[in-house]
Length: 310
Image (tube, rainbow, N blue to C red; front, side, top):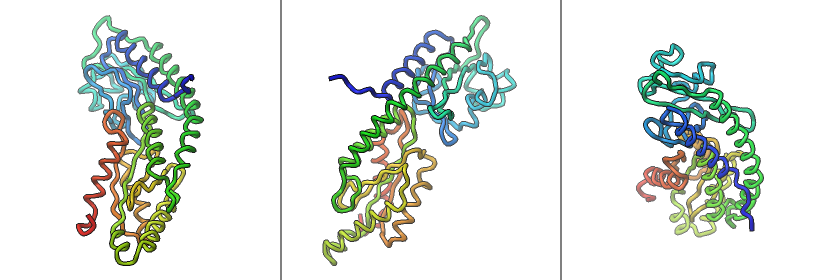
């Protein structure tokens, strides 16, 4: 049976072929397809030699690519002598540069196809600006196609995940949660989509079960689920993944935003009179998978639990 089209994989393959080709056919040593989101530029698909690695994150407004996207030159033979780039701190590390923006399927900025080298270009070395522009446009076309393919595939996958629910709370169960994580990981790897998670553990459930009975314990669990649901929007998926443990996935939320973003869930729990500990973390392409983020969030949650409830 023919494997269904996978837009995330198709974009990954296209991006990696482009950066490998440019690394081989231009004098610049490092090429990247990066994602720009919430003030950060994250390098997702990289042909690394000297300067850039997968997972590197930089302040967008301090980057060469930001200057280029605002109208500065697309090809910079000597950044330290170029008045449009010389004042950037990155020019101390990057001697030459080339880049073009990549647009997402909604027309917004997705990221940048860019290349760098530690040293300036020498006499006779050139980078074909028209080639970089053409390849960035081809990647934008591939991105639009890939997003369209994955939109339908994801709709089916999410519908399947949502069919796996916890009988008591109606939230996703562990199986549904794992499927949601797998879908999100594909988007992190291919597109650099920002995704964060929170792990929540209720305080005192065992004591309630022991002193008031399991009916009261179940009532506490449903109160917690209702409070978490009250804070959700369309970017969230909420699951009960253990006896008194809940998990939340938030699409579009970066590392720097995670703590403040998930505060809304803590507030709803407090309003419902539910005591709980929460830990949060984010996936970072090339550095931390969603499984890593879950483990980090779980560790942070445990550190926040009162001693009596550990």
